[in-house]
Length: 240
Picture: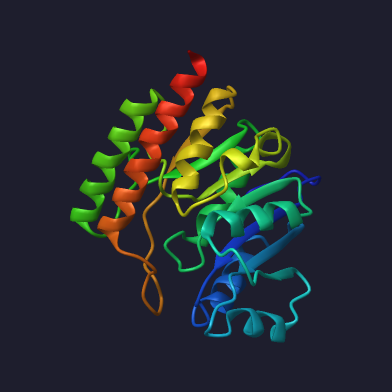
């Protein structure tokens, strides 16, 4: 068991859409990993047709704060809603489908003793994805992001990270939290622009327990490419 600072209050922010078969198992796993540490789990549901929000509410967990969003759906805006409702001094952002494995959370939090942000990466030594084709495709795209933005983060797509509240709240949320997973490209960019100390921690991508993901792999890459180029042009024009 890792020894944690006694003043930590961890808010785990979990956006969800149609995850009724996964969300309760995930909540229990996160709670288990953070036992002995003050924490809350914020589940932000984008009005899932499958009743994800209702299922979470019915359990009446004392450590869970469910949030229902009924308009303007989107992953990034759900994360922002969670950030704005969080009570902790440390935030962990993760997906609700087990692609982000809960057992990494304690180590991420422990390393915040030395860093402003700890980012899970599939592309530093020890990191891995289960699909070789997806691993190579994502790796190449992340090289593209690094070349275009001139930054060093090896995995700007994954969206699994721990960060001090005081660090992320210095950023302009309006510049970051819109769209889908492309928010993470913008977040990593602006964290590096502000000189934040970032640790990249190797992780192995997990597997969804039940159900299917939301969205086409190719469509996602096209969208992320556009947003990366737009970010580069916007910042370059601003400098001029």
